[in-house]
Length: 113
Image 1 (spheres, one colour):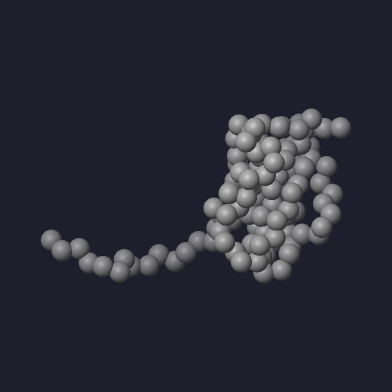
Image 2 (cartoon, rainbow, N blue to C red):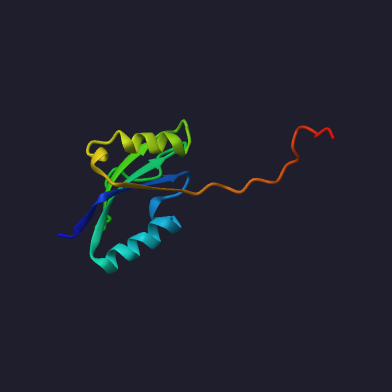
């Protein structure tokens, strides 16, 4: 059995992507496999339809999955993570999300000199 990094809870927010297809998850999975460890992960799925199956087969992870079609944002995912049993014993949280780039827009006001 792999030794888990019990002091850290990772959180990844996904939207219309499968967890295994995200760069963060793929990269960290590779690193955990090389180290022979595992990490606890909350997957917070903001997609309109669930993107992950009910059963996960990722040996380097202890995954908890939450689907929320309301797309409440990253802060909701973080709050959900802090409410998980045992989360108060963690010394750190890591939160990842893929936020799309927005076009630069002019400010809606003008400065008076």
